Length: 191
Image 1 (tube, rainbow, N blue to C red):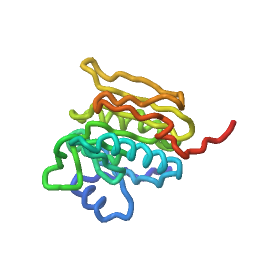
Image 2: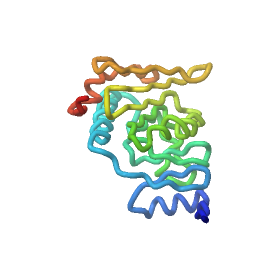
Image 3: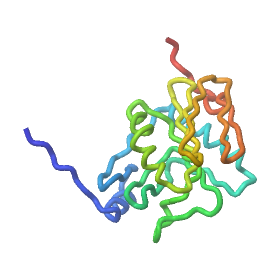
Image 4: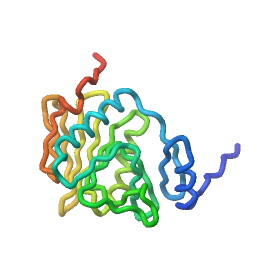
């Protein structure tokens, strides 16, 4: 039995392919990974969360970006499309490009069954190499459940929120978002 060799791409090849493609893809260690579509719950939670962030940050120097903004991680060895990225101050773009930002302060991912392990593992490891990143927020779509990582002097502090009446406290931005707003109009299946 033979296996297909892994295709390897340079950053330049990836960026050229990604800009011309009808779909988004991420780049990690010379490999390209196509991104699949999202469920209606995923899209609703992402929209709710981005909207709440925008409302709370309206009068600040922070911008909230949706899943269409490419983030450069690991100094050119990884490129991702997070569900939401918050950049405060002037965006820092990859040299020679205005479509790839390298200075997110907050990244939010809505977990999907197919990607939840990757979002918690290798993708978070890649994001941790972004010097400006201060918070990483993972939001479940099957139940009220938020995993929240905050960078501290000693590493990353982890908290969980499982109460639908709870609040997501974002200390870096000095804001709180009720989970009832994050999960507004999301229907969970009964057991």
